[in-house]
Length: 260
Ligand code: COA
Image (tube, rainbow, N blue to C red; front, side, top):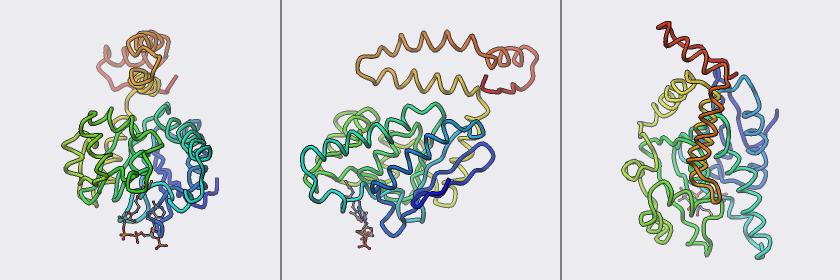
């Protein structure tokens, strides 16, 4: 698959999706969003891929936001359509993905960039990273799920302060807020993200998917997270991986899961 704005690299069962528009600080234009849709759909359906790390090309930015140059001239209907399409095709696609996705935040993660990181299941950051939702400086609000996911991740009060002031926070502050789970020096960011994902990939793949689905269910309007958990828990008993996990535990050996 050929991409103009992304680089894809495979390392054993980990797939890297690298946003590669360095001259524009990896800002998300329409083409990049379309490519992200294609790349994530392919990764989720590719049995050779166990999990994904998404990061930005270069050292300066993860993603400095949606491409502001594409906003000029949009009307109310087009603005709504932009948010709707982006949320469904990219941000919800990643959040609801059946494989773990880690955002390795290597620099600025602003606006749509922070929203992209927040759609991922886990976030780790370089100590040089800066994060924020500065849309109100443009007369806008976050449109790719930012008002919801930031409040879910760090609480309503801090989220409103960040969104209303448009201030950027440092990686250390993001760690204190619980927005990222680890902060590393720049050289360690990708090796440590890989280490974390490798550990996750030792676990049963169908159980990982069931866990992601169940945790997400509690944050979806109209779904009962506890009921989803009961259903998903039950389904796990029908998997070969469950048999393997229990057999391995009883035989005091390491489980080898096949995702079946
Ligand atoms: N959309 C489009 N282009 C962007 C962009 C964005 N969100 N963020 C950065 N760029 C472009 C700049 O226009 C510039 O392009 P040019 O060299 O063709 O002029 C290039 O990326 C480098 O950015 P620059 O602003 O010169 O870098 P800087 O180090 O001075 O500042 C930032 C870095 C991140 C503080 C600044 O680029 C910025 O504020 N970006 C917008 C952030 C934002 O509001 N995002 C939310 C969008 S909803």
